[in-house]
Image (cartoon, rainbow, N blue to C red; front, side, top):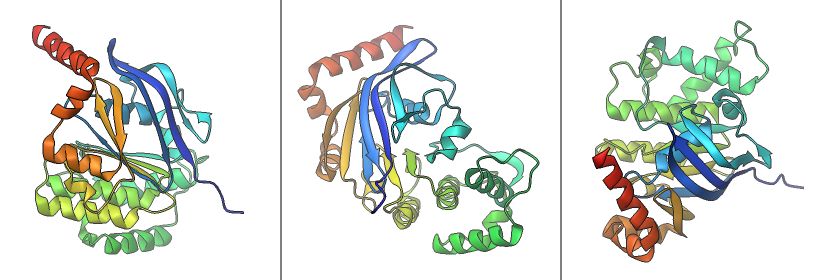
Length: 274
């Protein structure tokens, strides 16, 4: 009997930042093996959803639930969520001078594969780790010299995003959330990142791609496309919806959902007068 795919389920999720409500009732299900695209104008709540999913302490869940295979994770810290198989590729990856890419990955991979490990206990065997890292970097067409550099220190925008894809490949999460991974990249860099993600996608990983553009979706065609407006998912369709949004923008979405559009406009006015 084949194992059922794991499910990341979001129900009626409300999230605020410093007392300001951002998400206002988000419902979404992502299964392993599925590719979802989440699109929407700036300020609609896309990145807030990403950070809330992985447990960023700044983003307070005020109502609703997040669960993996029926087990709620609202109260879990980011490390516990990572061990359950959640991964976030950042829009703006953090630089850590003095920490080499290989050392960072060896610690991260060990902690994911051995959740009960305590700090100071033995890491993954060096020979085993190096072999896997080299094979993975070869698969992604990343030069081995990359592993000797300090984490994101002096990296170009494209190199930082390739580092996120390398982490994704080594950690093998059940659910990958990519927060505007194509942001700030030229066409060649987007193609490299897109192809890397496409190589890693498969039946054991559910993918949620947060994007403004269609470029990242050319190699990673979504089965489901969702549109956020004013902190809610207001429309869901297939890949053709992403193509329509790329071609025509969000004017039609606002016309079809006037109440959400009015909330969006009110929030903009509030920001300018605050």
